[in-house]
Length: 214
Image 1 (cartoon, one colour):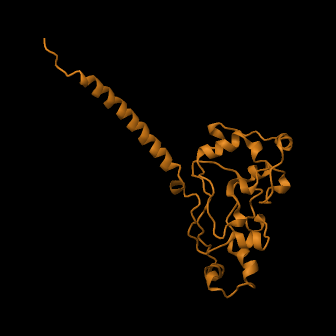
Image 2 (cartoon, rainbow, N blue to C red):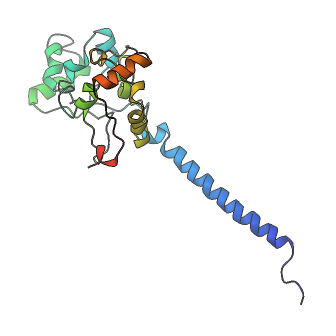
Image 3 (cartoon, helix red, strand yellow):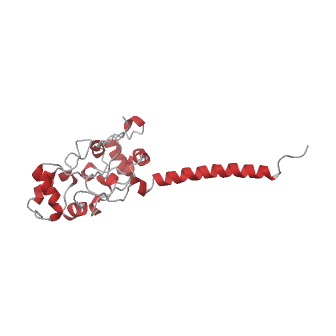
């Protein structure tokens, strides 16, 4: 009986199978690269806001503490978006006629909050307690970056689960004394100091699903 298929058929079949597998792996790799890219996560992208607020000017230039505007940062699950009244504490006297601050004055006059766009915002199915992280010695800069160097605000991390887990698995790399939590330029202690703080603040760094997901 004559041979039905040419001997090269086996080579072609193997090449086709391996080629398909490589193409599938390449497609998955491409999807991963896209979903973790700054374009997809919106990291380093300035968000449109009702007012062009400069953290660089207010924090680095004027020396305002984070807690002056974000009043609930130490004792609430949320840092809180500043109320218009906080803005007007200063701007009823400074730049009180500036066209750029017209939305602030209108908000104050009508008692309608400004609709700020959240920059660092986790999904609704993720539980993040701001006060716990502050109490455990995690500085603002760990999640928000050098906010004092941002003329307009952008996100400095992906906020993907892997990013959270990396910190939970190695909290000693980010911990600092509670007195330095709001000092953006502060450096983390040395290895010995880090371990002392881990024990002092009783950092448990959970990595189970229930730690962050309801």
